[in-house]
Length: 600
Image (cartoon, rainbow, N blue to C red; front, side):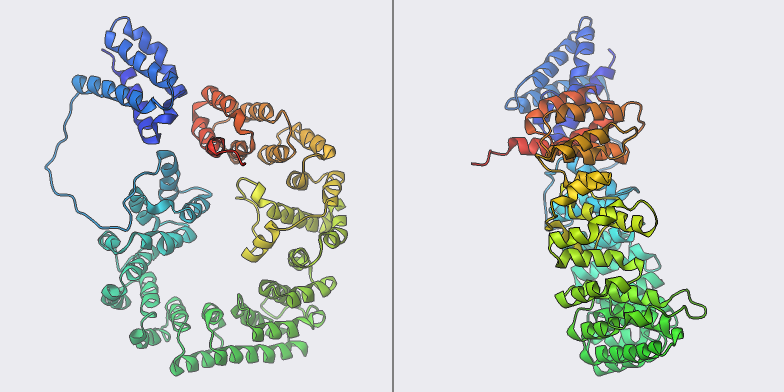
């Protein structure tokens, strides 16, 4: 008896058992096996029984799918066990148990697989996948513990830090033995993150280990140990010793840990350092420090250096920029007053030429001041930036635009910036491209996946998403042939926009079909599903893998009418195998909306 068909059927049954029995109804992979099983059943009757069981499952109802799946699974397992070998080599031993704060294993394989892949394999967009999973609480599944621990070693530091700060601590102190198993005090940053997680899980029990790491560890592990010890008042003398280390990385870590405390010894240390030439080490600590004495000392030094700049001392440009770097993210009143006073004389400092052995000029100072005022984001700061917009360097234009979007009315913004859409070269074209990205950021909630596009800071993103655009932008974008902006602002009832979008799809090698489909969905285009299927067939024909364009196109399926789901599932049955999983994943939001009760 040839078991190839039986093994293939068993493989699909295992997949469906994990994914859920309702998904087995209409499953095209199992349907493909029925003719071959029926043909083999002419010689081996048991194959005919399997074919009948498969047909009952795929052609039955979702209500009966669990029973049919169990029946088919039982039959297949019986055949495989009677025709093959069972058992395993080796001796039995007790499993080691680790208590955790969660006990769920209910996540479907379709949801689990991309998370495991994001944590254990290289590739683009992994950070967004993991971050979104954290936000929706997906890491309560026990099967993600080991992949998350592996994520501590990830080559992408932001992802590894997210695992250390948000994911692993949520499992509770019972995770400590697993983290200690591979902790190497002579190791790299991954081992430093392990130490930080251990300390976060149980600070008292990890204190001695941190002291040992400070004495014997590698530089990366020592940095982690300093961060942990800096949280204990009685360990501050140890951290203070490291503030004099010859290693700049260790010294910077010690200063950052000390910045959280207000003892006289620490304050005197920072006041002395501000007068020296170590601002490259002070930037992160001084951004976090809240002691008014230290802040005033920093601002006084800034005023002194700025006074020298006004006298033509361009040699002070690098030092002044280092001081401004220390003020990043600070929004207190004293800092704002200092920045406003300096910015009021931007017309003078913009003329400064670069210092010797430095490419930085007065224009760089002006741009940095603009950025800091924008981050403060107060009405006074934004209005000051806009009042000086004609004097600012070209590099500051994005901040001028975002300040206007946060301050002015939609009509005023349109009248000021709409003429830029007509520019096709030079500085005007660059500003037009920045404007295009701003429109895209403002409409990001209508874009399935914003990966690959420029991001603004958190305050800008919040304001832009709630922004109302003047209706005249859409006509201006069509006139200027600005396709991205038309896609973002297209609305129902605007026939010129609909005609423009359909014309865009006719362009050869159009790379933004997913965005266009979403725009057509907002326009309520009646033949959208047929158009989507035609585009999907064309994009996947001859393609070797799921590229970004195909991925965005698939993801735009969530904007199609839920009533069209049967057509889309039928298309999946004829789609090339390498595209099927991504296509079915993209249909999940549409399935969810199809099962939602109608709004009364």
